[in-house]
Amino acid sequence: MSAIAQSESQPDSLDLADIEQEIGQMIMVGIRGTHLNDEAMDQTRIQVTNGEVGGIIFFKHNIKNSRQFRIFVKSLKAVPTKEPLFLAVDEEGGLVRRLKKTQGFEEFPSAAHVGSNLSGSEAYDVYSRMAKQIQSSGLNLNLGPVVDVNINKLSPAIGQLNRSFSRNPVDVYEFGEIFIQAHNDAGILTTLKHYPGHGSSREDTHNDVTDITNSWRSSEQLPFKRLIDSGQVDMIMAGHLFNRSVDPTYPASISPEHIQKTLRDQLGYNGVVITDDLQMGAIIKRYTLEEIVVSAVNAGCDILQFSDPLNLNENLPRQIRQIIIGGIQDGKIDPDRIHESFRRITLLKQKLQQSPVSND
Image 1 (cartoon, rainbow, N blue to C red):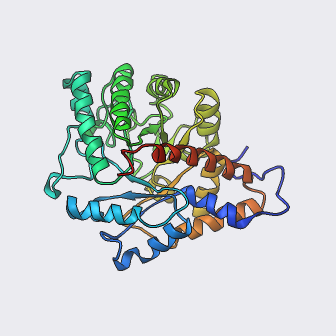
Image 2: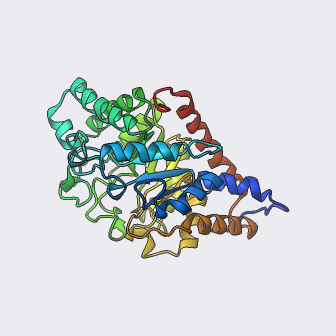
Image 3: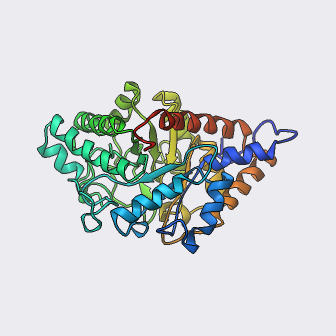
């Protein structure tokens, strides 16, 4: 059934105030500012206060230095909200990092270096220092570890950037688990990426659709499956990865075949799924905003990430909300899907509230 097929039942009436708050928790955005009183932050302050967004992801343009960034994040956390914000960063080590030495932060080695050169205890030390630095900045979510298996060492998104721990999926699982444990010990949530596996790809989803139909291997599921079975997964990021043998229409990030049927039903994952940035070329060049949003929700994704710092639209959260509400009213989205995602997100956010470390 198409991801935007009509629901069998349309609600007679909706409590719009409640459903809008639930939808807000499903939206994560990038922002322009470096201080809460920046003019660029006016709309963000309103959105946070009104519950229009549930998470913020930070990039290099938000960070001048470590002191400024700590103040910025602390001021955002002080804005009154019903639920705490996810405050996220891509901090993998190596080339993919947002907290840089030139800004007063410690930098860490790539996953490839860790997987090839460090013992388990040495890796834990690296990721413990990484997590404590994230925590001291006031953040609570790292969009890592990468648990892609390094099948194609020439992959422009993974292999060439040294983002994978190993070609051996067992090693990827073991180092991924160490990354998670070190972060959780510091009160930081983590995110497995990029489901169903980006390591065999020949393209980069930042630019256009990445077809893994003929290159993907079932062994790429092993790190995801073992970590799911261990009960340690906070979030899984769905990549814009197209596999015609699974879904001939949509990439994994907006595909019910990948998310609902394979990840949830077959692999047994019932936690939060976050999309990769839905403004990447792989998605935005091929689908309308309405189709992206409706399809992602119906696929079983819980957090829709719109983070491109070069293409930020301050009214985007409102547009997304209206698309989802319209989809419910038109029978394209079952409101139970929104309630389901809200429950998953708020359950995970309880973990933040229970952690004295992450609320410093």
